[in-house]
Image (cartoon, rainbow, N blue to C red):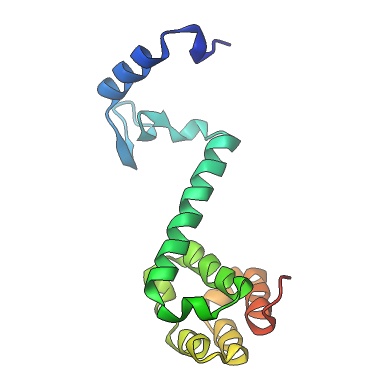
Length: 144
């Protein structure tokens, strides 16, 4: 297997970026393969390192979205913040904002009601154990 360091890295990357072009969204290349980034064939999968990098970026985006959406964010402890970040990570911020009763209960510090509202949702039916764990953490304020 060749390593990039065996070649003039700067030139190779510059030329490939120009030739492939960048797409942040997946698309079908001329050969019909699902592709993203600079010509990465998603059908070949991604490395564990790439997955970790993407995970960190996605978590940072979820934290930023939740923190920016709810002025009472700072009143929550780390565990309850995590629950909202996890829900945002899973659902997206626009879907999380639809949990009006749960969010109102969080804002009021009524974590028992917030947990109950989580469990009464369609989301809870879809994700099962994840919702039950998050609801327990929201109610108790403790890591599960």
